[in-house]
Image (cartoon, rainbow, N blue to C red; front, side, top):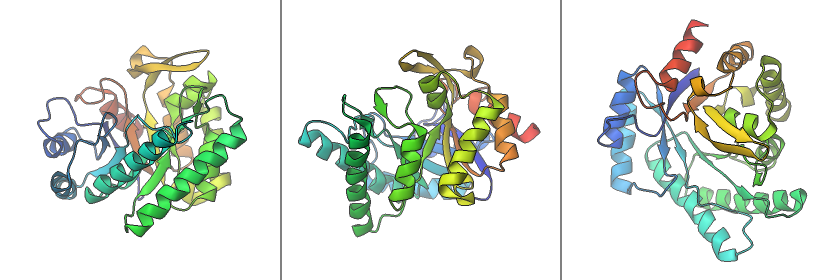
Length: 276
């Protein structure tokens, strides 16, 4: 990536279609949009091609979030198979949209030993990547850092997957990391995140960031739900300072509830970055 691109999770308020949403994102002064397939893959191939054309016309970078209904560590084989197919189908449609990156939540520990869960999920992701390669689908596959302690997906786990499986890179959700740890909310702690990324993936890891930002409510078990930044304790200025210090490049997607309005957090974050 040449720079940091900032966008919304889903189409902005008032959008009549994804194509219309892309135009609104551009009007808001943003330059990215994440396609939200979280409750289902709502787009067919014909629509995907139109979305891709609209994004190219408006010079908007697209990413995609696969459905929530994924657990690659399910105790039921049928659920694992369905989870893999949801990721593959999301990648197929996102690729037709010319999306750069696809993220998803890998699953849950299910009270299993963490090393066992890691190897199980790595095996399933390798099979997903193999099928996508066979179909000549080229898109970054991004296991996301998750917000609940019961979920697979701490930073070390997604970085290790990125080291060991081709076409895999992390999606770093900073709000999830904060909720999961109760910490990771200072400049020094954000710098440590980027030190870990660079140590695992090299300088290219810092130039290929797909990240989520929002406020977040949490308790001792981790994430409860997303909040607007002003209603949370998340220190966005500290994170922006770290972005600058490490010359981060990639796509930053805002997931705050108000991210889709002209005075929402997505626009605020981009303006804050540009003025810092």
